[in-house]
Length: 269
Image (cartoon, rainbow, N blue to C red; front, side):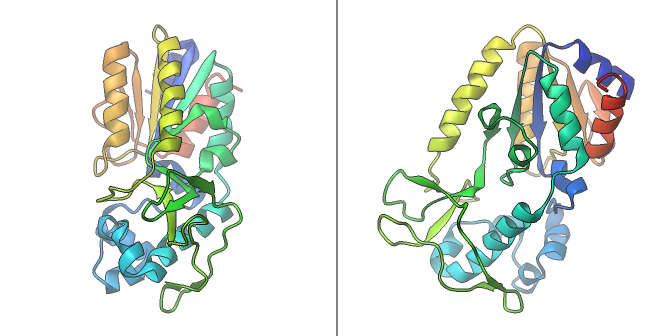
């Protein structure tokens, strides 16, 4: 199957890379799979009996902003400190060998950008932790979190003051991420990325291959998008997932790094 996957990618003129949380597992990032997996990464959530879906909710920025910023500040620090695994760089080489490529991801970690993928060829459908917005929001503004430093009392899992605030109105700021139960997310940045993505799809209509990494069924955005494009474009879908590889033209039950390295060795060196 891996040989067939490599052949399909090599023959395609355009490559669509779709990725969920499993893409970063080989870099040491948690995928929050199931309540127990999330609780292993964040024991405080177990103590509070909160699932990922319950904690990743904008209401905490109103009810307990120090807890909310402990969670998102810890993730921001983690993503900043994490080096993308070697598979990212080999995947970029493969992508650059095509007429064009695009990345569609539900990840908010910025790992594709860190690995050198073109900022204008990435669609972060759930936003990015590296950008901020007003909690209200008071205006349609998004700004970079580049200079933001969040210090955390890990024993009590509380972010220390000062918490980030909106420069316009002084309200608490939050990451520009689409959370669960979120009605105040500013999608301005995502809207622009979607336009670039749609333009890519218009160009890639005749000779496209899709490869999906680490996208589970719990939050099926990535899987559904890849399947729809595969059907509409008559494009082969290669699904890389060690636990849930089913439902694609080619099913590879392995991790992202291993799959990329094997495909790379079969024709892209």
